[in-house]
Image 1: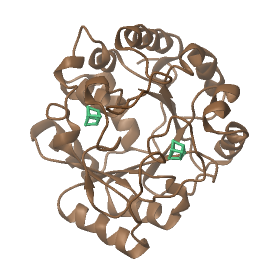
Image 2: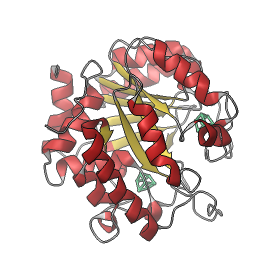
Image 3: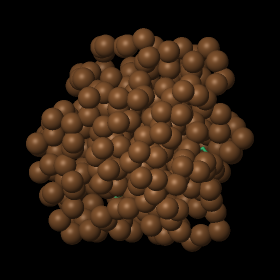
Image 4: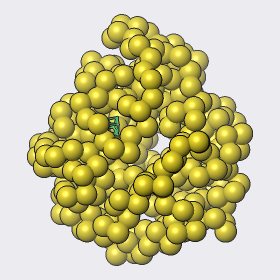
Length: 307
Ligand code: SF4
Ligand code: SF4
């Protein structure tokens, strides 16, 4: 695994300091889909910085010591110039995509493909034909993407089918978040009540025991979500590592509290990035650290079974 000096510096900061390390940027306010569970298009949109303004923002963030970037939208592939620039400016870049526009080459960045289940479930949530198109593009991707699923009420009973399908494809691994509701909105169609979610969390560990570390969910990450373990140690804005380690920005370059938006309900959060960060470092956990290094090093491939 190739860990450059820049990537080692990020890990060192996580390990040894309390400083912010990462920028999460909505690089566009546009998307070609209207997924039914998406918070993004239900909120009002800020304007979008043009390419040179966005690149200047990113260079400024890097100059302030933020070495890692996560690109969100809208749909980041609608701005390939910005994606490519980010992967050169930052020491580690993750870029989320719906997969419908292909996977542009990123020199030093990792694509994360969002799908929501097997074809029928995915397309019910994301729109007809989206699954087939995303998989067609995945097969042509220059490097295997990581697939990410947000587990919600609509897909929780189909996780096994989805994982089995994904394991037959050339992917680097699968990540799992849980649907995070917003305050004061009725999200009962999507949100899995926390006690019920505990059972799904434990089931993800069973899948890991079957498929190995391509299932990007470790016992230490599970501990972060379990209501009777560590969940209450971080499920508020002030306690969540996002408030200290990550600076989040809207597409107009203005700051926002969290990638999920300002009205996300921290008390019911399902963010896997938080689980991975806390799982890796609180306390130090080798399996979760490997998972994080796999995210940071695009060329690194993941073995099928746990080492
Ligand atoms: S692709 Fe992403 S940003 Fe676009 S509607 Fe779906 S969840 Fe929202
Ligand atoms: S919604 Fe989740 S990730 Fe965002 S600040 Fe709250 S606890 Fe952290």
